[in-house]
Image (cartoon, rainbow, N blue to C red; front, side, top):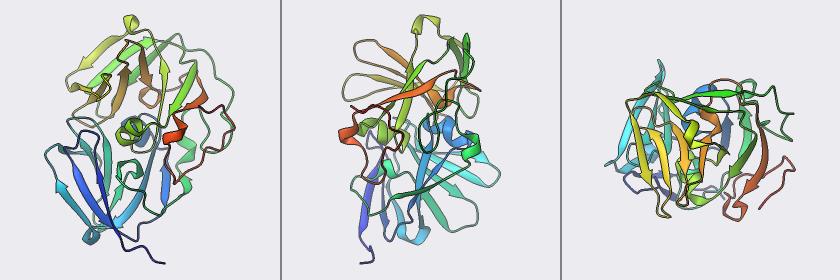
Length: 257
């Protein structure tokens, strides 16, 4: 049966809300550098014509022009990566992790796979780790936040919890880092969002890029997608998989928790 249901969605903090009425296009995973920077891993999106899309709350909504032909929508209060809107196409792409229900779509393919990060493969097992990187340069998409941490990334863990899916738009991937080695080169648009569980997430209010995570107990991790160039790491594990989205499957045969 054709899906004509109206599906609600929102950012993590609730400052942005929307509805999209089906049918919704199946989800595509995008591995381009811009999507990896903003989401912190790789982004994914469904799509719907503008006449079947409505912003119902825009208190935190911000737009960043990421190219000459498209803008990206995110929440400037919590940093959730929400939308990608191409110029002149009459449609909007929406992160599947932003939906509050479970629309009947599925992850059907991947694009720009040649730009995937060195620590994972778009499908199947990750590649072997590359050369060790003694120091890692990291930045947001617009360049207003830039920093370095000690490397290499080592083990990268993918998190499928509901908060990470809301913020990244799909699911996140990060590596543990020693916060004492963090050195900022720029932090003009750095913001911190305190999650309901007491953790803190760092992101850029200029472009919405997800950057780092500090657990309530103090453990610190960096989003793998914000690293400039090779990470020297390897995707090693999936966590909180009981909360994963129903539209995708984990196909890399790595351990799951």
